[in-house]
Image 1 (cartoon, rainbow, N blue to C red):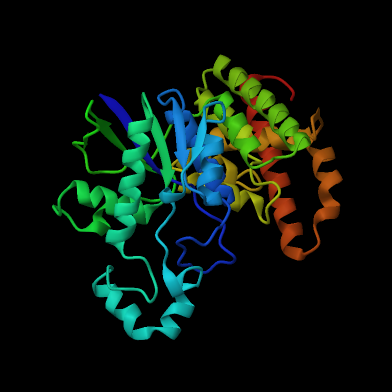
Image 2: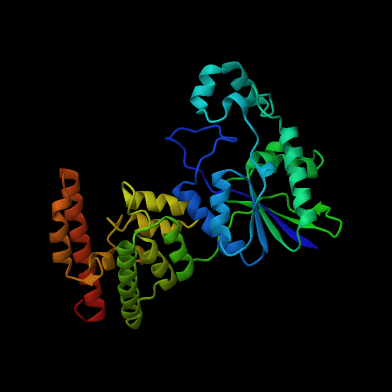
Length: 357
């Protein structure tokens, strides 16, 4: 038996905050999409011998992150269903231009779209492509493609047991199928799989590199990590036990969205969507804690306030050097609150550990 992994690409970057109808419209990966592709790499790269992917950028970029060291083969018929006149338009525009068809599709998702490839036609095209791939390959393989063609293909395998919509899969997820010596395909579990590997240093580094985090930001994160783990060890020696793996991963990733607006909120939301709520809490609170209490988020918060770039500094110097960034009353208030929280945490740890930080 061989293993076949049918993978939906990572989330694409839409032009704005609206929801879009994309079939063969060619969009690159979003920041979240790059991170999803790295998680796929962590979960699947050592299980497969090669990767096949569609002509669209979002599939190619996902495949590139997923298994950079393996052979990559592009196959045009793995591309997403052509969605005709709707392809590339926002759903607000579609609702405005085709209200009757839009409403009909709410009751029947397979109601025809003007000029679009039918689900049956795109599913057959994809099925033929997968069959040719299996005949031309050996070993366990991955196919990086798209939700519409994958769902049509899986629906056909199940002979109509469920609706086609049942098999749509979210970005960055996959189906695991088995292939026998005659290239017949089967699977016992009709549920898609979302990768959720355990975070470690190597994975954290790959996640940072996937979003092109600048070297100086990564160096700062590494220095914060070293200090945060040192604080954990000091506290543990005095009977206070924290999840050091969580602290370490959270510190390595705390500035993952540094290049984005409101980077603490953005970074936290990214890891919440990836399925790591504890990491979300650390990232989202490193510029202000919800509560001034000693926990993993507080340890990373304090370590960040004791490191300027890569150098150990006092809390007072760190905050004085950053005061110029406060351009509004709200920013100044946040600055004062963070300073108070940092000094309080420092006093708590110094009291527990009978030392001076």
